[in-house]
Length: 266
Image (tube, rainbow, N blue to C red; front, side, top):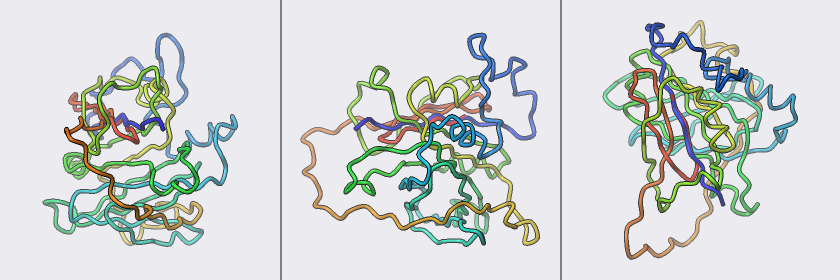
């Protein structure tokens, strides 16, 4: 099975000067209609219009949080909040945007974050192993701190192309590397492979009055997803290199990471 990776990008919400005058949508002289600035749901709508999605497919997704943090997800016509564990694994329907609530944040008592995950594709494991191969979306401590400081982070999880695959041995940890903050993160993920999910997280927190269905959304209900309990495989004689995902951010300290589910952040 091909490994999955991430690219990530960070945008300072209060520093528009960080955005290049050269539009990220203009790549190699060609206009790219999708980038990090399109509203949540627009990317999947484009893919649905071009019949590039599998409607109704339920993809297990695992939001990986720092130790001690907890998460819940909103879904259904009433925006019902479903508590999850840590890691927070659940089944999401492809082509939809799901709002999560993350609490018990490191070094931030009482603070909360409300990221979204937009599913724009899915993996293709054997049916009986579907829940053993979720799309992994790591949320790291430094990303949480940046979101709490008012920055907007976008991660694009994608399946790598065999021709562009890393030669490093696959591991369990997500390795982070740097990419240019001016890169169109969606185009770069598409160039490197096949995008499957987009994570967006910032410091916006609703009040009791604004936490309405318009904010939490009404995507199809989530479904239970737990890995199959199997015997632990024998450990290799020598340690393997960590997996990675790819990210870039607008504080000009973008990074790249590679993983069995890859992400791009900016």
